[in-house]
Image (cartoon, rainbow, N blue to C red; front, side, top):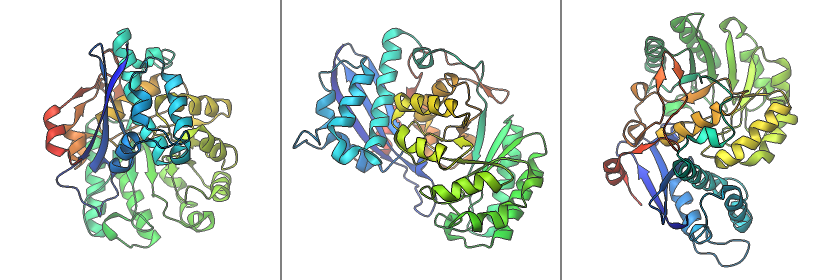
Length: 389
């Protein structure tokens, strides 16, 4: 089997709102084709225009080769070799960041091809099932342009998530900081008020995670507020400070009354090693559409296991990435939850329309996928409708 073409599609929701902190409004979809008619699908979570350029731009020297040219004519089943060829061959531009993000989409598509060619679900090819079921948490991002609208939206969605059978919920509570929702600028007591309201709506049985999206400049600022959150029984606090502030993460680990989670933006195992060892995070959050795909996620998971850390993959994207994340989770024994953007609880059209995931969600749990590959079914009409490049 040989790769015959690599297609990249920039998709953008026709109702996208640049004031939202939501990368699920766009995507770079990659479709890899083979001479045996088997296709693989993947996507990445970065600027889709940048990812498309990274894959298709011509190469001019050995340190910056054309990724598409590396792939065409190659054996799609030799995933490790291809990953290394692309990573090394594009290193001057792609060693970290958007380049590795784009490699993630390619890697995802190659695993999809391999699963289809072998007639097996991807998690079986990754090493087999290490969990009988995976628990997704409902990832909630509110709507509204005032504090009251924001709070009411989160409470309503928390109640609906509970009614849908979710056993865990993550609530974005971003009322200030660099990524404040819809330009809100509220004091930290309002953040605590929202956290309390969401916990009350969920009741004591449902696990609650809180994402403040880099709200505070350092650990000292963060601890002034979160040191009093023990009563809310928060499973983890996500990205309280800037991703590169390793010393603040270490202090948060030592002094905060809940687990600290981070890693959504990181690419490659090397960045995770620093955050786990020196930042002392409790929960590592690799995103299969950013960190280097399933191939790199496996290595990150292995490192986290060796250091007794929990894995909870980040995934704020479409059914393509959600399906890949589920396969990763079934192969990862220390994966406690996966992020799940419920189509019933979001406004993102691409999440609702682009594809259907390759698993069943029953009684708050994801059952092992049975379809070959990632099990994804693409909506070709949605691709045509939302393609902008």
